[in-house]
Each structure stands twice: as C-alpha cells, then as structure tokens.
Image (cartoon, rainbow, N blue to C red; front, side):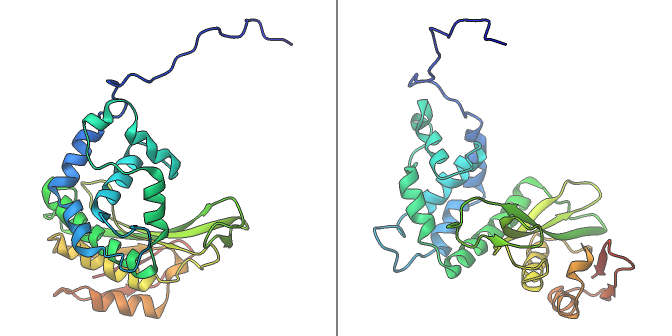
Amino acid sequence: MKVSHRPAELFAVLDDADLIAHAGLIPTIRLAERCGLAALVAAKVKLTGAKNGAGTAAEAKVMSIVGGMAAGADSIDDLDMLRHGGLARLFGGVRAPSTLGTFLRAFTWGHVRQLESAARAFTCNLAAHTGLVPTGDEVVFVDIDSKVKQVYGPAKQGASFGCTKQRGLHFQIVTVKTGTCAPVIVATRLRKGSANSGKGAASLLREALATVRAMGITAQIIVRADSAYFSHKLGWRVARAVVTARKSVWVPPASDVDMTLAC
C-alpha cells in the first residue's frame, strides 16, 4: 500500500487579524456580565498572600478562563485561543495562559471555597435572568453523583488510583431539574482519585439545596442518588438543610439502584 497523491505544496494558515473564530463568545460573555460573574468574583475571591501578582484582577482572569472553556479549551495552553485573530478587538482584559496558570496554581482550599461561593450566587442570578429552572413546578429533582476522570502523569496533584483502577481525579456533581427543563449544575467538587463516592457528599448536597432554595424554588425536592450515598449522616444533614413546611421522608434504596429523600 502506498500514498496515491504527492505531498501538499500549499497549506492554509488562519492568521488574518480580522478573523473571528469564536464569535459565539459575544452573547456568552455578555450574559455572564449581566448576571454579575465578574463582580461576584471580585467581591468574594481574595488570593491574599499570593506571590508574583497572582492574586490581582481575579475577575478578569476568571472571565478569561470561562471564555476559553466555552470556546473549547481543555488545558491552560489552549486558553491562548482567546488572543488569536480578531478576538482582541472584541474583548478586553484577556490574560495570557502563563498568567492564568500562575493564578490557578495559587489557589488553596479556602480560595476554592470562595470561588464556589461566587459560582453559587452566579447560578442564582443566571436562573433568575434566564428562567433555567421553572419555579412553578410542583416537584424538582436534585441528583448527586460522582465520576473518576482519568489523568496522566504521576505528578498530577491529587491524582491517584480508586475504584476504577485508573489514575484519576474523582469529582462530584449535583444537578437540579424539573419535568419541564433540562438538568442544571448547581454544585461541583473535585476530590482525590482515591476518594470514595460519598466522601463530602453531605456538605456538598446541603450547599446545593440551599442554592436551589435561593433560586426561588419552593416546590417539594426529591433528592436522588445511588446506594453509595446512603448514610444516616447524609440524610440528617440534608433534612436539616431544607427549610420547608413539608415533612422530610428518607427512603432507603430497595436495591443498588437509587435512593430518594423527599423534602
């Protein structure tokens, strides 16, 4: 077998200064600004003690990271896509990948919690602005689950072997939905790859439920999870977190399928 064509003598390079490859970022960033993402980060995220100016202009750096992720970046180096072509004429304050990498590496657990607080407040603003989650439905469903994301390289911080027998990071995610809307992420947490599924679930779910109530949702909440999350601590903490006149009922899993907590 052999190649049937000669090597190409011409090639294409997208280097036009007027070219805009990610024009769809304009409404995305405008929506983030309307819902106060930059202002929330500026008010809540304080990287005190960070060296080399890593803690300055946190709002601009977070907006750059969010914009890059929305455009498809999945690494720090990929965030440089925001400085290509004519994007510099559309957006100001875009930071270089090296600056964003230094910013992210300066985070401690406390700084992560600050950013999570900003994200929860932003989610509430976004729901109010767009109607992502209808507030008139009688029942809303809150789902919590975890997944191990495989990573490569032994130097990856927090990466270790867990239940999947692969080196990875074990994240948790909480979503809310009703019968008339798609799932909306209301809380996330990244953990070591060796963490068990239920580790930290009680506090994460409590914060997620508080966010759901802060959205203006007063309907009955059904919490759903697989049996890895079934524990007295989780049920007790969730029941106390939901302020409602309805009776809270804990329903143990009949099998290794799921469990529910009706609040």
